[in-house]
Amino acid sequence: MKKVLLTIAMAVVAFTITQAQIQKGNVLMGANISNINFGLDKPNVFSFNLNPKVAWFVADGVALGTDLNFGLQTAKNAGTDINYGIGALGRYYSGETSGEVVKNSMLFGEATVGISGVNPSIGGSTNGLGFSFGPGFTYFITNSIGLEALLKYNGVVGFGSSAYAHSLSLGFGFQVYLPGQATARKVKNDMN
Image 1: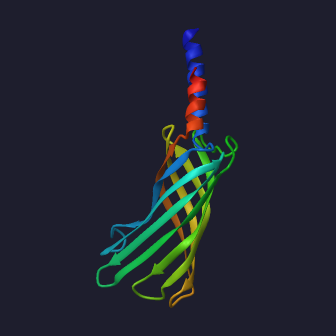
Image 2: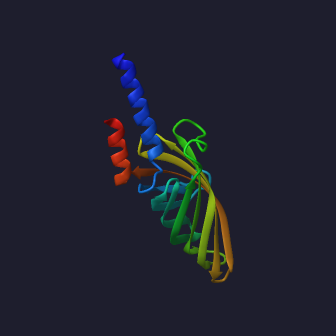
Image 3: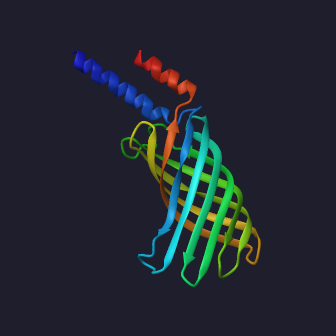
């Protein structure tokens, strides 16, 4: 009987912690990487795009924060392309349980707006207002670490030799969900 009660208690705590990751007051930190190429399909080409982010949950399932972006593509005898950006980030997770596709997973939408630039070595460069949006999927491998995939449309409107630049990216990465004080208190109370 004690084993059954202990198992039920552990399941309740695990469920509470899983749902607590996206509660108001928590912090999300991590990065995505996309456009990775080490010259396997195109010889003498190296490219990547790194996208670190930090956000605070201002409400359950809603996070606001900062988004950075740096991309590099270099090819032998062809020059270097550089992409950059810094701006505001917003994420919305679809419901506590209705958004769960697979056990310990969540769907979300992400949008950013800020200052960005696309500066290829050949062709038109664009620097100005950058924006992106798209759907994502997070699978929680632990109570506080999520592996994610994010499909985003990226655009830059502004100045330079080209007035508009855009791309579609599929990024993979991880996010760490740090509990706020309210979440830590709730988990502690559930354990007592």
